[in-house]
Amino acid sequence: MNKNRIIGLDILRSVAILLVLYSHLRIYCFEYNLYKIRIDGVSVFFVLSGFLIGNILIEKIRTNKLNILHFLIFRWTKTLPSYFVILFLILIYYIVTKQDFSAFNYKYVIFIQNFYTSHPSFFKEAWSLSIEEWMYIFLPLVLILNNFFKIDKLKYFISVFLFFVFISIILRITYYELGIYSSLKEEFRKIILFRFDSIIFGFLVSIFYIYFHNFWKKFSLLSLFLGLICILSIELKLWNYPPLYFTLESIAILFLLPYLSNKDFLPPKTLNYLFYFISKISYSLYLINLSFMQIIFIPFFLKYFSFIVPNNNFILYYYLIFTFFFAILLHYFIEIPFLRLRHKLN
Image (cartoon, rainbow, N blue to C red):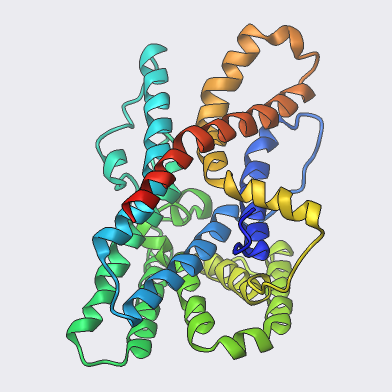
């Protein structure tokens, strides 16, 4: 395990992917009435990703070392290979089984299938990747413009981040009040222009981490308490205005970061390794767990291996076992080789 890793952030990433898995495995819980957790695992990923990438971008811009092409290659060698492998496998499956894949088009290749409209039914989980990819294209380009203006970098960063937050919130409120979109899950949650703010909140909190680190550490416990209060208010449904739901969710998550990013936060060693492992394969788990497993593998498994499924409850067990199995394969045979390539390029 890398000694420089921050275990608290591994825990947060692990919780995020476990929340995603929990929301998707509920269809296999035939005899259990599972509690519906309102906090969205993808929103946790957004804020955490914004925080981590924000630290990298802001530090490089502060020291005039940002190379946008290098930054994008650094990110794409992590995200694109596995994405295109799963996209290709799903597409091949649809072609071979002669199913309708008319929802697929070139937009999936350049991540604009949900730029300003709801995400298509094909490869449903790709919606969040589109939001992240475009955010990490737009933001460095906007931030590096600071080099052309005689503006204090800190003020410029804050102004840009607040602008993106404002635009996303105003768009959601406008579309909701006009009755154009009303579905929290399928529309507000999955449209690129509506969700930039979730990632930007992570960038905003990275400013405190870099510029006001003493304040960050001093009030970490208070921040944790506020975050838990926000999460509780979400779970108790005390805040139900759809356009601002994701705003409160993002604020709740960012409040957790000062405490969890503290290197002095150390759970038992066994848990360290567990969270480290889940965190490492979280991206592969995300790509594997929905379309690949629920559309391709589980139907195939039930068709040809039903004799080892004594009752419906076993479907859940097989779903979890094979989700982790295929995620590990994807991580070690696709992700890691490209990460090694990235290291060589560096």
